[in-house]
Length: 181
Image (tube, rainbow, N blue to C red; front, top):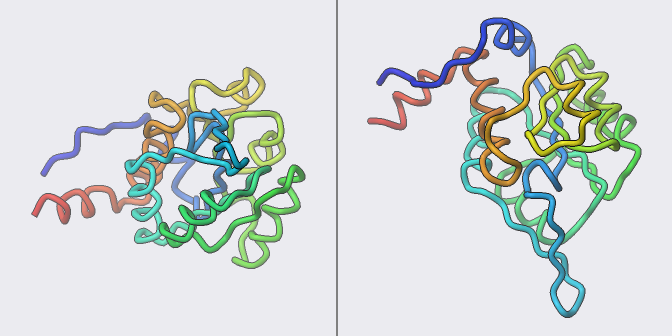
């Protein structure tokens, strides 16, 4: 099966060294809306395309990590279902949180990508070798991003970024062919 996805060669070159990806949650994995039940429980909507992209990253040897200013049972449940073990939740000081994950993995920022949408994500986006954002991100984030996804946050933006990293790593075609069998 021949892939239909294409990305500019300069982006693929930038992405080749990525071994860990830091994702924000609200405004990246979700549409950014905050939903609360009458008991105050936080509800979140996640897109299945994004989840499958995270699983594909793991199969390709790229570690997905989450650094989020918010914490919720719904988020913990989703991360557990996806097998994401590197997460720092409820932290606004994201650079040290991501730095501790890098240390655990024995990596540095040159092997890191980050995807965010607002000012708390700027330290990660500035340090990472590859920065991405959904199109609804704040203007300052968009200005730093090497790649702005076509898909919206909460509607496949994470998957689009995962696909770019998979193409750059050389495993996209193999995974596509395996899925088409």
